[in-house]
Length: 145
Image (cartoon, rainbow, N blue to C red; front, side, top):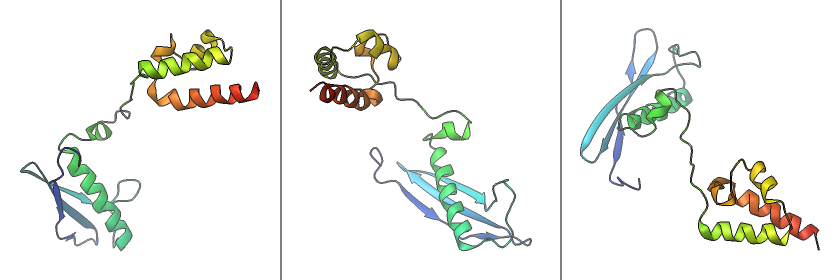
């Protein structure tokens, strides 16, 4: 939505089959490009469900929308069987200075700190670990009073 706020989607009519199963249809338009997608209502073993209830149809519609979104490349790693992408962003210089100050104030061993967070230096700390590191050092600082 950040890049394509004008994107739209539409659910078509459900397709009812002679065996009582149902296929849902979704069309997604992004930046003037339209991609249709379809998906049968299935159980957890990927078998078609005969006479699905409204909840099963609703859930399948949302899965179908996700599948249509993946046709534009967003989240395609899910269908490729890959792991979720990792955010390997590191902390800013200012955040590193804040941590170094707290490490000094708490007389903490920088080497142990780096080992705990699996980094070679304070500046290599991952952004996702920053809040946890600050909280731990602040807790240690409070205990020193």
